[in-house]
Amino acid sequence: MSTKVQDLFDLSGQVALVTGGSRGLGLQIAESLGEAGAKVMLSSRKAKDLEEAVAHLQARGIDARWIAADAADETQARGIVEQTMERLGQIDILVNNAGATWGAPAEEHPLEAWDKVMDLNIRSLFVMSQAVAQASMIPRRSGRIINVASIAGLGGNPSMMKTIAYNTSKGAAVNFTRALAGEWGRYGITVNALAPGFFPSKMTQGLLAAMGEDKLAEAAPLRRLGDEEDLKGAALLFASRAGKHITGQVLAVDGGVSAIHGA
Image 1 (cartoon, rainbow, N blue to C red):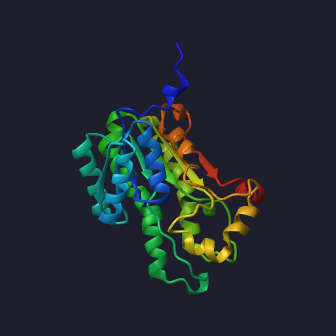
Image 2: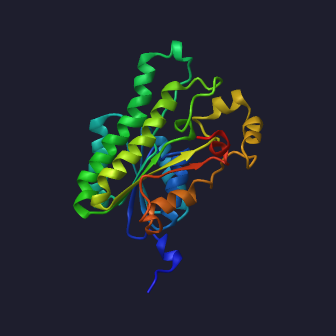
Image 3: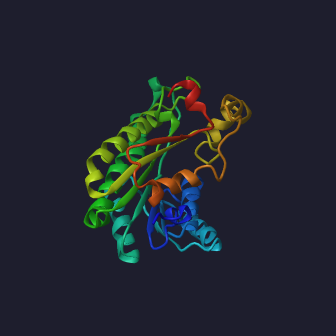
């Protein structure tokens, strides 16, 4: 007997760990997974932001907790996983969303800024994924890993953006997703990536102001930027049984921008 489609998206009894989950895209994804029934653990560096985010989720009836830590630091990243396991017993879904950007012309880009972006945007993906897999997913032969990449990792760097470290790191996140999916499929772990286009957020507010929100919206086939709902369905697909036969894929959620630019 086939499973009802609503049940395929049900995450009741599962635990989701979302890095960078205190605001923006991470919080939107956490809402989606929590509303589908998962217990949610948020992590980011700032306790105040996390407290506000958890209060927001709890007001929506979601079982949410938080851990303040820097996912770019290996010791702290592994501590996030250890504390989540201690408090919730397992990790079924890992969302690697924590990220940083830096704007500077390539010829002037500080090396320390390059390292900061790379450490958080790609090194932390490896550390978090390895730690979660070792602690929970491989022993249980089951798991969902969702990496938040970007359409900036699907093509080159438009001259006005000047974010070479960010774009490079997101390109690495795309191939990290594919490589890990190929290696960990035998453990029943799926690894996929979301590649958002332009969404209003604290990270993008400077870029959107410089490039013009209306101009960017008009450049998309759908004539709009992403909003506070546009990642929810895609994230839930990758996290749930509905996506159990999908792995190694990168889904652009960008209003069609990557389609017309050939990314």
